[in-house]
Image (tube, rainbow, N blue to C red; front, side):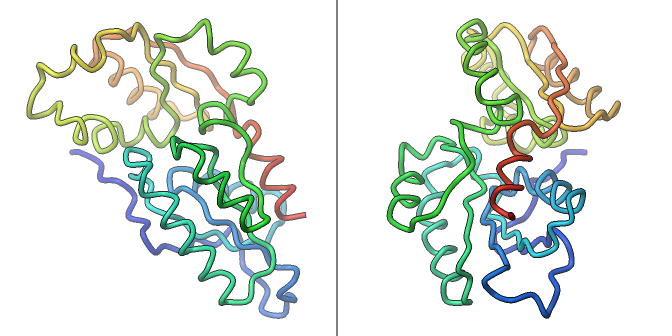
Length: 220
């Protein structure tokens, strides 16, 4: 069965139980990609960040990054109208061609550092140092391993036109699964994805990488 993308257009996922008595200037609105919702929730729960309110834009916009910035502006405006003084963008640059950085500058808020989630999960410095050796690697995270069909096969229509596989992935040599959790089933799915694309397979456990200090700083 094909997993469908997480439906997150207007989802509010709580990082913990926000105390009703928490002063508004203490509460933090994190507006994030739905693709990292599980990880942000886990970080909040593990570190007692019960005052963090996580709102997710659709995870499938990983494939359509031009949609991110306009929706981010609307989500920030909504947070301001609700009275939030502390807002954090739960995205890296993520293919927005500088639009998220413009929003950060205009609004006086911060985002997760780095170009994309593969980088901050690995650790931005480590990823930058190693990336020039891996220009033929296609990366997966837990979400992409879990929903490879919905985020890769279906948007590229590889299920309908398998001949496109080699056209799209012909210059790749391997799939690198950057795992946030040690999950045997997700490892099987990632290995299946590599076999489907005819690529070598490599597994690396990253944990949450630079995402943890980013959320901890936002929620401090």
